[in-house]
Length: 344
Image (cartoon, rainbow, N blue to C red):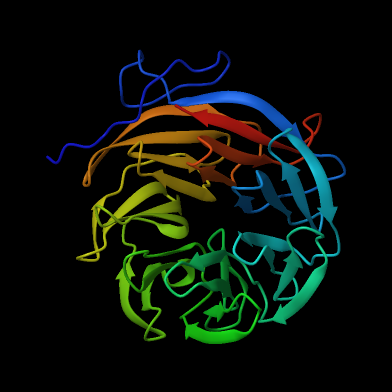
């Protein structure tokens, strides 16, 4: 086996749950911090973006039709951008001080000034503009959108193929990569031109070449279905996929396109993240965060399970801040908030 740098195991704040395949003496390397309360935010929330230098977090409040701006220096919600039709993804570009928000309801990408939050431009794609990524090689914004939508084992919206739209930082569409159905999470290589795309309607990962603008491979997800979240370990050529039915963490070898591991994990995941420095995978799911240690590229050990509030399952790992953020919607007596965990 190839030796890997393991997650640092520390004591966890009392009150968090623990279950795993490792010994009971080990606890997940997450320390709960005070949550960030959100006022006047109702319904489910989706993905997060971050401004590292400015210490701001951007939270897409899907049902609330807002983007919530959070000042991490003071741990407080400081701005709410209204009038967004089902916002799902957000990305802040420090080079241009522009904020890109993908809205699923009307298929637009809204571009805001990062200081004044003034709307600069609205780019219309198609229904269900969703995840947003940044291509460091070309300095382009990549947005998944359109196509047939598959949820809970059923087609909830017909529509044929989906796509990845490629935008410059001024909002001009400079490319489009056609896919077989709606793209869920996708990840871009930093040292190459490939992009890996979860396409749950086809139960596969579609691999596209950004330079060629086309799909170059299709990898079947044979261990499970409803493959939504994704993360990439580019150094060891491993792609992590979160499935819901059954709940499994699927690990692909990105050189061969073959599955090398598929252990059972937390139910109904919507986000997962790989931390290269810690050699850990964090899986956000229904009521828990699973923490997996990468023993070597083909072997993974769940070292803990952290209990989280009801309906918490989207978030963002920010290694530069040493923190993992998770959204929690208003649920009964539980108010909307961003839960914060320190990575140890």
